[in-house]
Image (cartoon, rainbow, N blue to C red):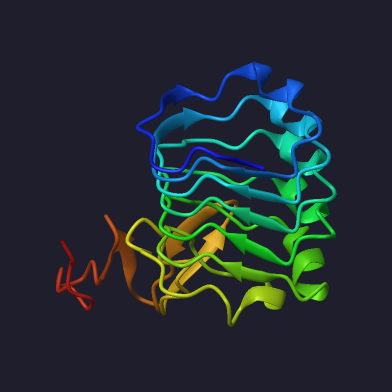
Length: 193
């Protein structure tokens, strides 16, 4: 067990962390750490990894090698993406990714965790719908201001050739995101700024 909680550590976790191959629990929470080396994936005896409230921006896919991991706590960082390899951690009972800057889609592999009754806490991010059916009720509050109208299923919008487009009723034309009648230039939908 190694607990370096609240020690004002900064920078990346050193790659030499891999030398602690008998380590079962690692707590690096409440520091200013910015990165996790891919060598963390060599700590295959880890059952608990907690790096809460740091400044992490990414998670190496090698974290998926930690097959004995029971608890993975990465909340309160600056993570923007989550590797699908976490979904392979079949021993995981608790995954915390709250209050990060996660965007994009949740990997399908996370349904494996849900099926194994893993508690997933993922609120306070920037994830856009549609969400995985297996996690629909567990998403919590998300900042969807960066989501497209299509992702938010706003009326009148549809995806055409990968582009979210406002589809206007017959007789109206889409001009700069507004449906207007070219006969009298009267806007049917107000422009939103």
